[in-house]
Image (tube, rainbow, N blue to C red; front, side):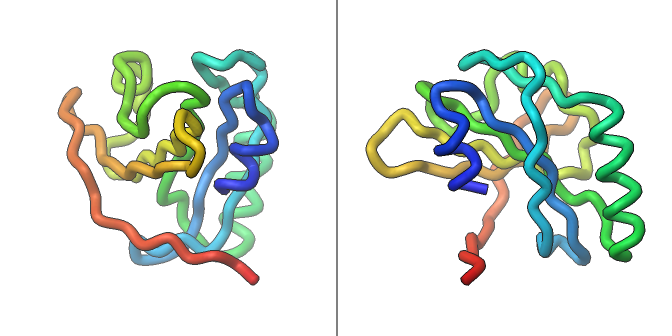
Length: 123
């Protein structure tokens, strides 16, 4: 996830996370069809394809991630306005500093709720 964000810099990267019981097992790197450093949008056909792959794996969609190339790891007003599901985790990877910073949140009724998370690296 972090590597995907670094590769897409200076544009926002985006993707989906799937797994079980609030644990992500699979990172789905998506294309930001906007190709801009200040927002992202996923292609609906690519989303539907990935949803089918998630179902085939027996996993559930548990989160959405994207990067903030120059902003902190906190949801922007636009992120809050477009949060599609209050049960999902929203992960933001900030590339504003030399070392990426990550924030994880739920967005419910326009309220941003920080979540505790652990990041594991796949070897």
